[in-house]
Length: 117
Image 1 (tube, rainbow, N blue to C red):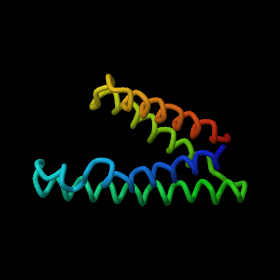
Image 2: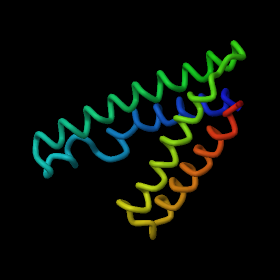
Image 3: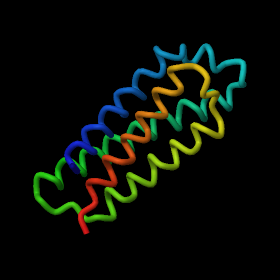
Image 4: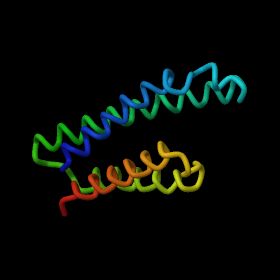
């Protein structure tokens, strides 16, 4: 299951790479100001790095048969928090918002299932 969790995290890295095209960055960020535009794009780049590193670690360690339970547990917490924030800061009426919330829930569960105590 750690392999599946790692692959999902790599998928989210690719999803975040597409943000520039999907959301019309940086043009559509411009009204928020140059500082907010820079911060948003920097955070996205850092998140891409985190997803790549975390996903690669899960995949590599799953191949070694030595995934420490803390690693997928932290991933489950990350995705659980992201799911909670979806309900707090995003409008859940549009179907894409509902879909991504479901994906976050499944992703959290996959990471939980990867925990071997």
